Image (cartoon, rainbow, N blue to C red):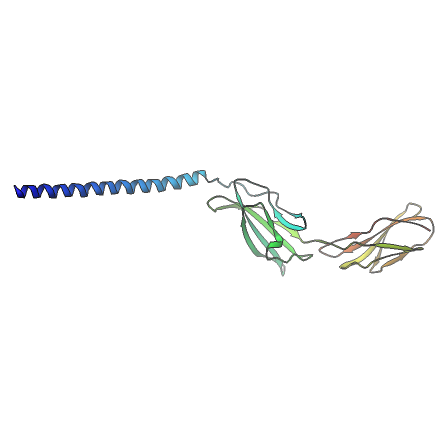
Length: 222
């Protein structure tokens, strides 16, 4: 009788172990299935990137320069900055952002007049993958020259020296309506000849990387 009872106890323990193993396998299968389902759902809801950003440009907002791409709500952005150094473009920085505009003044680039750069932008989806890059935008930092001021004394027109101006141009309308552009080089004055009413403005011509500066229109009667 005792032997039979012991056999029943052993059998009962084996059944319990078997049941635990079955439960363990079931839980493991459910966990694996949940992981697979999560991965599939993640990739199904993550938007595919089937386009590259367009209309990449540099814009000035309140004195700050930004590289800007067209806005896409479902994507983040990756910006690549390259600078022209010794005749070749060298990658300076790659920046990921949730905004479609990158402030250049916050990057490690020298924004001096005449410095040349190129930029490209790609979209980034929720899993961190980026799509194709846009075409390169080549851009040169151009700075306006200081304002040029003109003074008149009798028939002599003079103006202030403007830093970084390579030359000065006198644009003159004669009394007979003849228009003339006179390159005076680095001279800071011009003497009118003849009589009548002249209309004049002076242009400070900038070198590479500078916008020219133009004075206000001056009317002189001699």
